Amino acid sequence: MTFQRILTSGPIEKNIHQLWQRYRSQPIRRPRHLWRLFRLHREFDLSPTDPSSWQWNFPRGQIPQCSVCTDNCCKGPHNTVLLRLVDVARFVDRGWTDRITLQKPTFPSEVLAQKPMLQATLRSFHWQIFPILKQDPHTHACAFLDSASRCSIHPDRPWICRVFPYHLDFDQQAVSWSERCRWPQQADTNAPQTKELEHAVFHSFFTEKIRDLILVTVYREEIAASALAPFLDLSALSNL
Ligand code: SF4
Ligand code: SF4
Image (tube, rainbow, N blue to C red):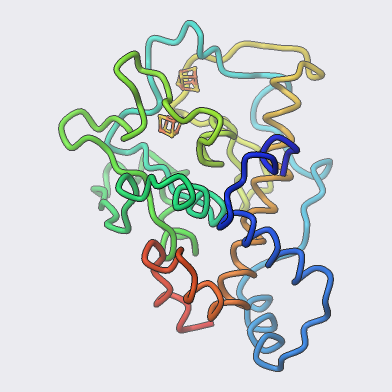
């Protein structure tokens, strides 16, 4: 989490970070926590990733050219923005819950056949539990896209938007470039935007995934009793 992000966190987001600190600093004390962790480890690889071992499916330093892009990746019926736990917490803190939903769209098989990233999202643990951003039903624009086609919550945008168009392919251990973004430019590998994207995709994004799995599984009673509960589908945890 960046310093800026800590500064702008609201109380519910801070609670999530405190719960994570508790998990990291204290040994698991309750047998039920231990049992849940054991089962989680059987289902998922929760080990931290080593970026040097991942393959890159595009040139290092490639970044999107958003300033000249005539497309907009914040629009489109298949551009689903799935939230992380800290995103939900931030949205609850900000009072933006009217623009998130647990009602997930379905996609025709011919669309899925062309979109391996979307297929992976639909298979994920997050898809079962976490909400997505609503879209305008007519234009399929994200609920936060303003009339000038800019993100109206840019400093608070969800993690998936922060790392786009980078994407971790867990099966292949590869960093991929979303086929949705057709405006790449080559930057220096040490350029701030390159560094920011790589940091986000490897550390923040992956850590958030591990953190979400552990927090909602191990501390499900605390999460269920929090203001986050109406925006999560915790019934998917019944098998863990
Ligand atoms: S499609 Fe690519 S270049 Fe265009 S706005 Fe999205 S990320 Fe930026
Ligand atoms: S939250 Fe912002 S960046 Fe993310 S899809 Fe919506 S408008 Fe785009």
